[in-house]
Amino acid sequence: LLLGLAMLFITKSVVQDESGSAQLRSGAGTRLFGSIMAVLVLIIWVAASIGGASMELSNVVTAFAGTMMILIFFLGAASIGMSTLKDKMAQSDRMKHHMEVTMVNPWLDAFAIMAFGIFIPIFLAVSYVNQLTRKYLSFTKELSEEERNLTFTKLTHSFLSILNRWNAQQVMVKIILACFIYFVVQVG
Image 1 (tube, rainbow, N blue to C red):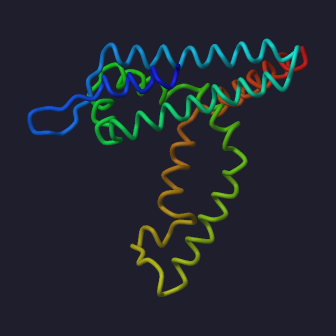
Image 2 (image 1 turned 180 degrees about the vertical axis):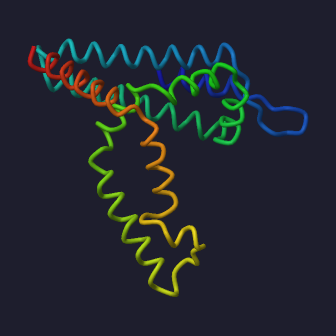
């Protein structure tokens, strides 16, 4: 039923214009999509509440709802087209506001560190080896004088400059609070 509603949203939100190309229409379809996602999150919450009765049933319901979320996202992106979706999001004032707010949100920074922090040393090590290879082997990428003086690749330096702009104290406090909340919820 939910997959059918998702497909209905996708077909109703894509219309054909005079030139024959697909255009994305927002409005009721977007609200329907949000409602479907909210129902799927509610299903996951219900699965967590029945976990005491039967963990197997809880795991099946959670896996089903999570798979449906991923499937709905990919079906929507495939039907609408990523370029059309990006253009619509770039034109949306609401999306611009949300992006401005999220760029300075220490909670998102904390969750990013918790989820991907383990990969940062690996990323730095690979970048360092990549930069050394570029510097000392003649058959690799040509480097400008500015890039030749860098310890890591230029991409890694831009990533590190973004991390440098974060308020590290606030991010660490948010990580500790999130871990504390997780501990309280899991242990009880």
